[in-house]
Length: 124
Image (cartoon, rainbow, N blue to C red; front, top):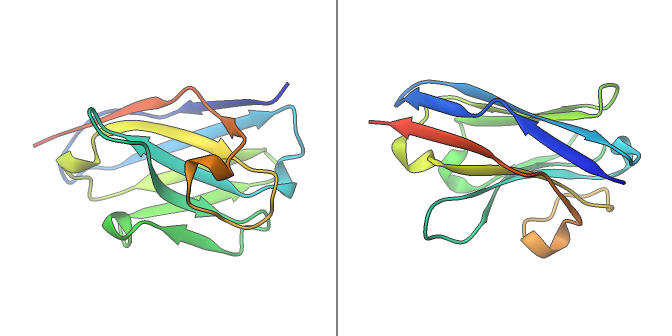
């Protein structure tokens, strides 16, 4: 059974930083691309960042470029999202997702496995 468990969310003031982690089990972590998505109240879940299976390629939605960094440690079966210069509009539930393909894709349906989500709240 594949499991993805996020951690690291919380309450932070605008301009602050948080580091999200996603630990995976039940599958060969290094063979699939990983992604982070988020869903704000009343909005659809959206792609935030993705990293290829090798870790060489990364992709970001425009609103987080230059502020967020995705990385992975295949030895620890874990993917990270470093979030700096946080803004109130970054407030959302953040989800980790895994897909069976090696390349990053940006839509929800491209990912087969999901974590339960972790809340990130940025106060102004």
